Structure formats: structure tokens, C-alpha cells
View (cartoon, rainbow, N blue to C red):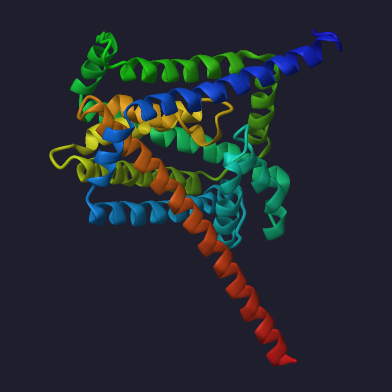
Length: 331
């Protein structure tokens, strides 16, 4: 057991490790991006605007529907409240995922949950359940993608074994992905992190779960993940017209999501997911085109989240004004 004098040093070491991981996760992809910037901008500007608009709308729809599934997880715990209220809190809280640490989106939901009659203990259990269902859905989608495109793994291995002084981007990508995995593994191995994980999983055993809503939630997550991969496929085709199959997009999207999620301490997996997408897509297109897709994908997702947040606030204000006007009319 660590002595009190050692605890601040260990905490400081973890903070320094997280800071270095964050700097490298964002800095290395940015270095690779600026190295290829003219070609990346050319590829991005050539993307079909109609396809981009369709992808943007699809991501907005995805964000709202994904938020609404939290209500099913809550109903698996016996909550029978309003789906729209749960969706609103989810969208509001998700905006905080960009704060360092990556846990604020979840923590703020626990704080806000009592506003709609959800006890904090039940909210905590629902978040753990939601997270496990989401990870499971992305793993299944990625697995299906690799089954549908069995040659992808061989192509990725060939990319990793390619040595080229002229093009170091694959090695920069491999460095980011390795750091994400190693950094996540080191943090998971740290006793404080293990204790936090066990504490977060504890609510699963303290609550009674109903199977039917959980199955419905998993099915919804699988459908949304599949649709998300279809949107990535459409974006790839917008940048480089031609054949690009859903299976490849599913393997790419699912793997990148998982890599970004397990990059502990990197807000929203930014940089890490883009590196993963670039690496996977480099088997289908040039590095600058793959980078253009990765950057556009992130920009469109952030735009969708901000739009959903704005619409959520607007609807809440309209609802509050309607209630206030009705109250005034009755008086």
C-alpha cells in the first residue's frame, strides 16, 4: 500500500502521463496532416456537396436517435419517464465529453438525472449498462465488417510492413494507435483506475434489470452503428467516387471507435480515431484522401452534435414558453 507521501507523486505521474498521451494523440496526427495539407485540402474540396449534406443530415439523425436509446436502458431498470426528457439530458451532457478526462459527459448525466425523476444510483447503473451495450454493438459491427471484407486485415498488415522514407504517414499512424493501446493499458493497470472501474461496475449488481428493454436497446445500437458505417461509406465515395463496400466501412468505423474509446484521457478520442480511420482507409485510397475523409468525418460529427444541442435547447425553451403562456391564460 502506498504511503501518504507517495500518493501525490503517483497522482502527479498519472496526470503527466495523461497530458503526454493527449499531446501526442493530437500532435502526431496534426504533424502528419500539415505535412500533407495541400493534398488533403484538395481532396476535401473535391468532395461531392450533395453527399456531404446527406452525411451531415444522417449524422444529426444518428445523434438524436442514439441519445434516445438511453431511455430504453433506463426502462430496463424500471424507469417509465419521458423519452424526450431523457434524450434532452443525454444531448446536453454529451457536449461535456470534450473536457479533459472524457468522463464529464457521463458524470453530468448522473447530476442532471434527478431533474426528471431518475435516482442517481439508477442513473449510474444505466450509464454502465449503456456503455457495455455500445461497446458490444461496435465490436459486433466491426467483426461483421471484417467477415465481409476478409482481405482487409492482410492489406493492413502489408501497410504496416511497408518501409518508405518518402511517406512516413503510415508509421505516424501506427505510432498513434500503439500509444492509444499502450497508454490505455497502462492506465487500466494502475490501481486507482482499477478501483474506479470496479466501483463503476458495482451498480450493475445492485439493480434489477429487465431483459426485454435491454435487448431492444442492443438492437437499436446495432442498427445505428450499421447506419453510421453506411454514412462513412457514403463520405468515402463523396471524396473518391468508386466502389467502397459497407463491410470495409463497418470494419474501419467500428475499429476506429473502439480505439478512440480506449484511448483513456483523450477527449472524444480526437486524433486517435482520425489516425485509425486514415490507416484503415489507406488500403483503399491515397493517404491525403484518407486524411480528408477523417477530418470531414470529425467536422461533420461535431456539427451534428452542436446542431442537436441547439435544437434541444430551442425545443426546451419553446416548451417552457408554452407552459408559461398556458399558465397565464388560465389565471
